[in-house]
Length: 183
Image (cartoon, rainbow, N blue to C red):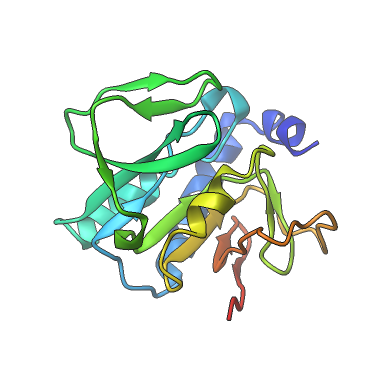
């Protein structure tokens, strides 16, 4: 349902919403860590493109190391650091991935920008259903920030939560910033 809702958003609305979410991210008042994992947006799915957030983070932390997810053996994610020369190709799911980066330890990552379709008021999210991010996030440090960005507000509750699902710390929407207690 949320894939369909996202596909109906106009380019004009998305551009305005992206600007509002950048402002919302700036208002979180978090320290920008030296290693961030983001994702390459799937344009065909109308996914939020975190590049505006990454550009801001790079401005605030010029020595930042940037990592992207790579699917390994169709069941796990690994973080791969990239440079301006890194080449991206679509994987079997149509997701752009770096093909010539360097693997990085999940414990070195201070912030993960987590893709999502929707999220609830407790910080749980619905992704694309394979559990990649939940498995990966469980390998990160406990204090690694997990932030989602959504064009839509939180639903009251996602009921099909798995015991290994990892909650977000924050979710930023055009209207509001949500903070979740994960302790």
